[in-house]
Image (cartoon, rainbow, N blue to C red; front, side, top):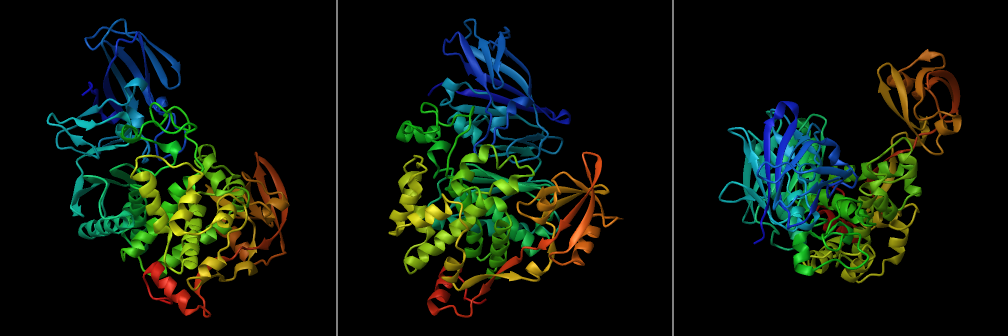
Length: 601
C-alpha cells in the first residue's frame, strides 16, 4: 500500500476560531511540489475560495529544516524540496461560518469539510489519507470515515476525504439500526425540551427504509452518520457518500408542519446518497473509487481525466435539475410514502411551490438546462434582478419531476413511473461507477418507460414555455385554482424589506406596476400619499385600494428624495390544489397509486 498522507488537526485555538493543521506529504523525489486547497466543495456549486481563510503557512522537511514556499496563484503554494523526502506543512484555518459547506470552530464544537482544511498534492490524490484529531477530553468525533487501530480516521483517497465532514464535540448521539446497518444522529446545538428522540430515530429509520425500496433492498454503505446542527434561523443541508450535514432550527420540533419540513430536509440529503453521490452527471465525478473500477472518464467530460473532480475550476453540467429537482420531488414523496405526512399537507406544500414558480418572471427566460449550467454564476449569487432573469432548478426541477412522473403514469396506465427511470439510472450508471452524459437523461427515461418524451423535454426542460400543469394533475383528479381574493386585490409588484425605520425595495418584478411606474430596487419608501409608512402601514393603504387606482410614494434613492406615482395592478392569485368533481374512476385510482391515499381525502 502506498504511503498515506497524514493530517493532524488541533482544536486548541477554539477561542480564536482557528484550526491548527499539520499535513505530511512524500515528495516522490520532485524538485518542486505544489500544495493546493480546493476552490469549491462537491454539492455546492459556487467557487468559494476557501484559501482566503488559510494563514501562517510554513513548510519544512519533517525534521525542522525550513523549505522555501512561493504562492503562485490564489490556491497554490509552490515548495522547493531541496532534496527532502517529505514535506510537513503547518498552517491555520479561520473557521467562524455556520453553514453545511464550510467550517466552524468554537467552545461548543468543531465542524469542517475537507475542502476547507486539507491541502493536497495533485499527483498524490489517490493516496490514502489519515486524519488525527486532537480534541479536548470528553469530546467525541463523528464522521463517515472509520478509525484505525491507532485512532486515526482513514480515507482511501483525497476525494473521499473531501466527501467526509467531521463533527467533534461533547454531543448527544442517537443510534439506531435500519436494514441491518448502524446509523447515528449527532446533535449539536441546544435541543428543545419537546424533542422526542425515540420518534426522531423511528421516523428517520422509516425514511431510510422507504428510499432504499426505490433502488432495491441493499444499502450502499456499511454505516451512515447524520450530522444535525440546531441553529436558530438555520436551514440547509449537504450530502455526502455515507453521511450528511443538516442545519435546522431548534424550533423545528414545535409543530407538526415544522417537524415534517425537517424530515423533508433529512429525506432530501439522504436521497442524494444515490442521486448525485452515486448516480451523477459526468461533470461531477468520477471519484477515485469509481475510477479504479471504470478507468478515466470519456473524452469531453468536464472532469480531469487523470484525477477525477477538478477542485480548481467549475464543473459544468446541464443536469442539476435532475440532481436537485428530482431529489426535491422524491424527498417529500418519500415521507408521504413512509406515512410521515398526511396527503392534505403534501398537496398544500405542492400548491405553495406551484404558486412560487408562477410568481417568478424568470421562469419564462431561463430553461432548466440553462439554470443548471449557470448555477456557478447565478443560483448562489442572487441579486435584485435574479427573480426576473432566472429560475431555480430545485423549484422548477421538482415540479417538472412531478409532471414527468404523472405523465409517465398516465401514458402507461400506471405500469411505469419516475421510480423506474431512477432505477434505470442506478443500474446503468450508478452501479457501474460511471457518470451519465447530460444528453443521456431523456433517453434513459424513455427506455425505462417505453415512451417517447421529446415534446415534454423540449418544452419543460430545454424550453422557456409555461408548464402544462392542468393535464398531468387532472390525470390524478386534481386541478389548480386561485384561492381567496386573488386578482381583486391591489398589487404593487415588489418585494420589500424593513431596514430600521426605512422600507426598502429589494425586487421590482418585471412587467409589474412598480417597475412601470419607475420604482427601483434599492429605493427606500418613506411615505405614501404624504404619510410616513412602514411595511404594515403600506399594506394597510394598499388594502384600501383596488387595481387601477394610483398611489403616490415618497422614496429616498441614493439619499435623494423623489416621488413616484404608480398605477396599481391585480395581485397574482394564491393557488391551491382541488379535487376535480369530474375526475374519472381511473384518475381517482391513479391518485391512490401515486400518493397511497384515497382520492378526496
